[in-house]
Length: 317
Image (tube, rainbow, N blue to C red):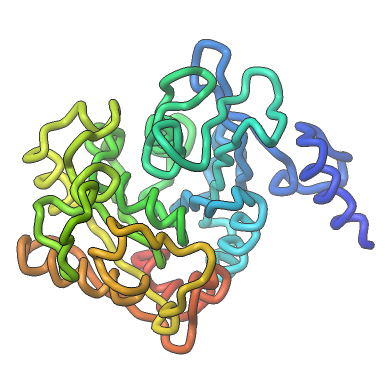
């Protein structure tokens, strides 16, 4: 095993905050203060203390397995041709299972305290995972820290794609900061947040089809702070690219197979196409695009490192 692999393995097992001096900053697990002694672990090309080098940033959201380092590595590979212009940030939404360091926020993988849809943390109680990304966006947009940063892309695959799509609907920081262009790339999510009760596959006797995270009813505290009309207006004004693998049509173990998701279509590819059609119909002037990747299924590396994936994430760089 190489020395780099040993360092990475030790980080994954021990969640250390320091590594040998010969390791690069990107190999280290950093922590961002969210205030009141609460921290969010993350990997980054440049620590969020700031740098004059990057002109664009990607905040990449991991999947259900919460393998932030893996997603950081994949997105860094995709960003390699952009050199020092690229800042990749991969937040780590831990659960109690990770034995987080004292002061680290942690969530669950499902239910009201799920990080996937902006739920409130188990510790500290009520901290939304969307609020944590708000902190990252504000830091990246701070010209005293990143004076040359002009663009931020928020991207995620699978469960990270669910996070990204819903954050694009309700995220607060993007509406508050200036001097940066912000776009969103949800890739192969299992489901989407709809704004009315119509569903492409019908909903029959599925009582929860319109509850959040699938619809606007019973939204969590973060999403409930804005009216449904405000959420519609916000989402339809934001730049979103739906990145779909054309072979993501299989009923794998990770797909949402609840009736709420099935009302949106049979598989991830079908659900994504149907959702884009709905948005295009309801908000014809929305700056939303659909980009499909031929021959690729549910594979974050192949998605983000494809020509279409790079075009979606790094457009304008």
